[in-house]
Image (tube, rainbow, N blue to C red; front, side, top):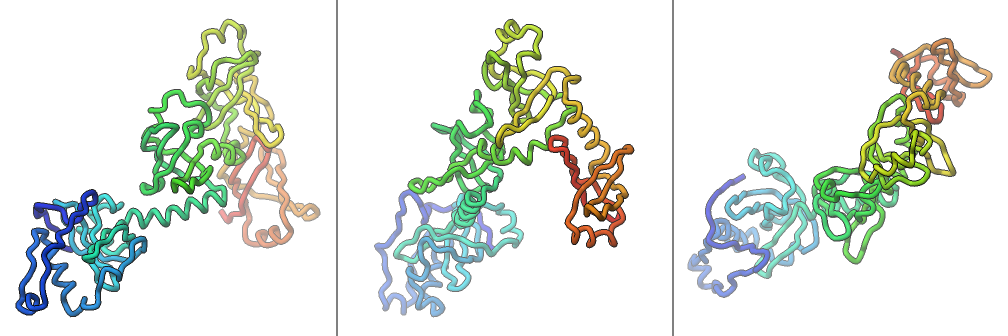
Length: 388
């Protein structure tokens, strides 16, 4: 790998002006006489010599195609012109890759690592000069990943980079730019849009705008689809602090907490709600406990309380069970008639049914089980067999 800090008088690969010197050409007699065309770009003569050599006699600008991806080998780094000069592995055709089109650290190239990578040709000239992009190449792969996320309804992380009209621009894996509408960037109304800049949030693909080749992302869609998983993380013995999502309603206030959940504190929780609510406004902080979590249709409803003694006692007992047993291992007894096992904790039996083949497969190998998850909301205890 050759590294140079040589200063250039002009940039051969000016992406804006795209000016090339095509007025000077060598005749056959000039070539036989060894006449050369001088160029102030340090690498230009080497490129020309290679193109005119026997090894490249059949090479032409048509050998590499714009829009195609090729494997390349980095040969030279020009810091003053911010350019990586690489060669296509099979043909040896030179490809210039601007620094801004390379996603990784240049340090790896300087130490001789990562010299081979894939690049997408996005511009060429009749003189056989190519501009390539490692970033655009990654973008093709990442674009397919986002289509897969859309099809499979899976979520992922992006970083919000810019505030624009209607919402935000966010970047996926430091490469692919996407759009998040302002109304979909948070679980509730955003009151200070600038606070979101630079944050990494979890989202889902809501749509794909083919006309603009742009993925539309949504945090709200993520919340709606992940709630059945995330709701089990709610704690009934924890004092939370949240913010009012809107002005107080006649029946109570809605509060967002953990930047994810939204619950209701009913007006009956306050001694004089009418007076207290007059001084409340959107964004105000308030401390509370999760009183209960219920289901209505397919939606979870989170009920909040100001008093710890108002927390659902059954949920609180399961919360205590979670604290005492999660990630702990226990001996178990077997009930063959039900194809189940029982775990005794504090003189109380917790039974889990299994398929007969799963029971038989594990009994001879594992004398204990480890509690992997306690779900107070659904009153479920999950475990895995263990030899410890």
